[in-house]
Amino acid sequence: MMITFVWQEHNLQRTQKNTNLLQRRSKEDRDQPVSTSLRILLVENNASNELAFRKAFEESDVASTIHSCADAAEALEQLGKDMSYDLLVINHSLPGLDGLGLCKKLLSQGTSLAMTLMVKPGEEQKAVEALKAGVDLYVMKDEAGSYLILLPGVLTELVARKQLMINSLAEKDIQMREIHHRIKNNLQVISGLLYKERNSLSDPQDIAVLAESQKRVQCIAVAHENMCRAANMTQVNMHDYLHRLVSDLLRTYGASPEIQAIMSVEELVMNPKKAIPCGLLVNEVVTNSLKYAFPDGQEGTIRVSLHQLDGEAASEVTLTISDDGIGLPDGFDIEQADTVGLQLVRLLSAQLNRNLDVTMQAGTTFRITFPL
Image (tube, rainbow, N blue to C red; front, side, top):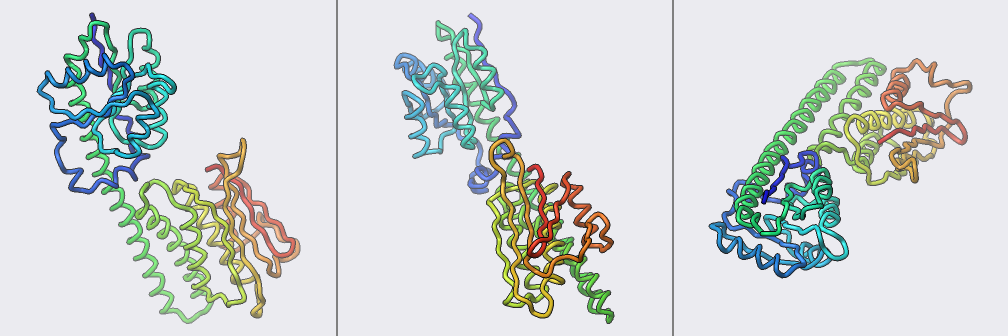
């Protein structure tokens, strides 16, 4: 009788998405060697199979603590109470939600536990589907139970490999955090040099040009600071990012109490290739409003919103920046604008692969919809 054990190198992409889960482990925990005593959650509805599984470990030299559940619902409830297991061993033939369905549900919830799916002859396609979904190992059972002889050693090696992967990702996490931190610091040095240069100038126009350049550098630095502090360092929290940018602009330009900023930004995350152009676009348009939309102490409101679309367009977001100020000059065409700020707005829109819609009614509104 052929005994089949098939595993794959841990799904790196899935594990990277779960960086926030790994970070909850202390450094001391990550540095500990894999325990020689496995804590296993066995999901098995057949009492004879459960007994044989326990006996295989009792007769092996692998120390273990085995907790069993009879179905997916009981397993989910148990994991809600205790996530300290080294390994989940799940029989595919479960009542209700089957083993593969349970694996997929756990993966969608972001589990980083090692998972093994037990299948019987005829369920090979389910096994392949499990590996594709991110399950670490499948075991093909045979009627004679021969697979049980090797199972303790195989599962011990699986947990050891999984721990090595977690340790490797933890090191990569530290390195990525350091990279973002250094980029942020370097950008802050550049910003400081621009500030020092500003102080040596006397021409107001030259000072204004350097001040705007400094804000652009700071805008990028804030994005890297956001990623440096985030659980997932490959994404920028747009709610925090845009609130910080607009708050800094109001303070920089000394906006009067009569000018109010209203933010409506969803809790979205974006990769930096989208987040930074989006932030720079907000920086340019809000700066333009603060400088020109409300002359002579005029009261007014600046609104910034970022919302994900619904339905078939759920993979896209709309950024809207508006003010109720005096508006742009008659005949304004952003394609013909020659100021550095508005040229940047045009270039940033192109970088987001979409055209910017500008309307001038009861003030000015800039709107762009682009893919996440």
